Image (cartoon, rainbow, N blue to C red; front, side, top):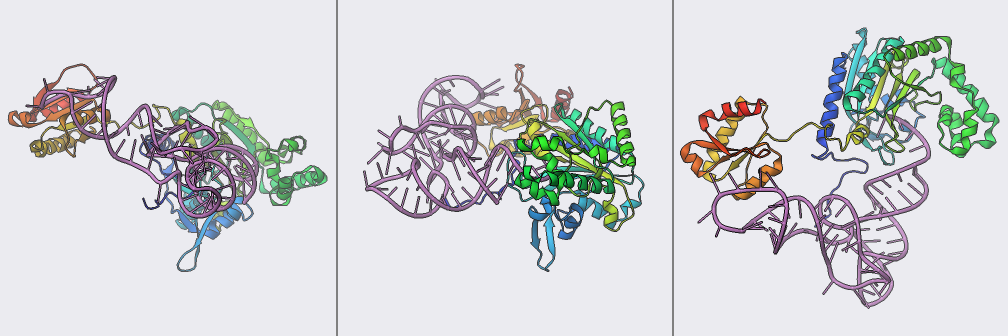
Length: 424
RNA sequence: GUGGGCGUAGCUCAGUUGGCAGAGCGCUGGAUUGUGAUUCCGGAGGUCGUGGGUUCAAGCCCCAUCGUUCACCCCA
């Protein structure tokens, strides 16, 4: 055997066994989003590199070391998108969508980050993204969170916990950042290497440290809530009130930071402990300054991303969380002479009963093996045609999942009979 | 980018102090001519991830490399 070509590291095939779960998820999510008045937008997978550098922040890990960037034939620097928000803002500006007062959008597709793969973390992964533009009040924050909660309910996931925080206005965050730097600077001797590294790059992340030796220092650090500006504090309080009103439980986590630079005010994550270290299944927040930063009108915005692979692994092994593709009918063709008639009959069934899933037996083989395949297919009913049936112009019907015996029916009555059988 | 575990049939995995490559499941053929699931009998399928090295002899020992997995980091 010559050496076979395999998938690129960190990128996976989704095989036929797994795709019914993906389809269940995709269908459920898109139906729920549609139910809230969100409209789908589709953006290219490739964008100019500059788009991500300017939106995510050049010092974030994603931009500084995780992007799939390459030079196009004409010398342009392009990047496989690492997330969707930047593209969505770009598309909105490019097509004047932000003229619409309350613009509700969603999208789905692959994202690319060159990270070391591990459980729940791939180099090509898939997200649903939801973005809403033009609304600054906490009501839309509450709606978007309630909508995500409803999605979990529809999917049958009940172990997700909502973590909530407010980063305040950009000014307040800048101020808090300085307070934090001062605090950690005065305890520099107790910081680990990584934290020292973060001190000037992204000091808020020190609060996220999992190093047990840092816990005490982090616990005593000044809290973000004390640095919140009055308006943000008000916004945050109202959001909590509204979440209470719709019975959504949450944990205020003042150490919840999120890694992208564009966030302000409300940030949230839905977290599970069933996935190991990559427990965030959904995360998002406000990014009120981003549209303006790209030269657009001042446009408040909020959005979130959901990791499809992570959700799928929560849904795996649940038979109810799959789209059913089991055929209804398996058509057994006992004699090659009968094939033209069998094909004609099956096409007639497809014409008149378009919802029926019918598998034609192709490729010949013994009667016995055809029956084995019919059984294996999971079909409820086998249709049988061979030389005898050809002469009598009839088709055999054998139920495969019940003990009721085999019957037969004339060609002309076939679809009517099937309609009756499968109307139940 | 850093550190640990693991790579043997399509899948899940055995393989002893280095001595002929294995099982279960799956696939496939058959058990008196056209009837599935249970049962019984047969068959196909492997450069043991890849490349070097040690040895009379390597799936097993050594080195490298790729992949995978888990954690750090980061995030969906």
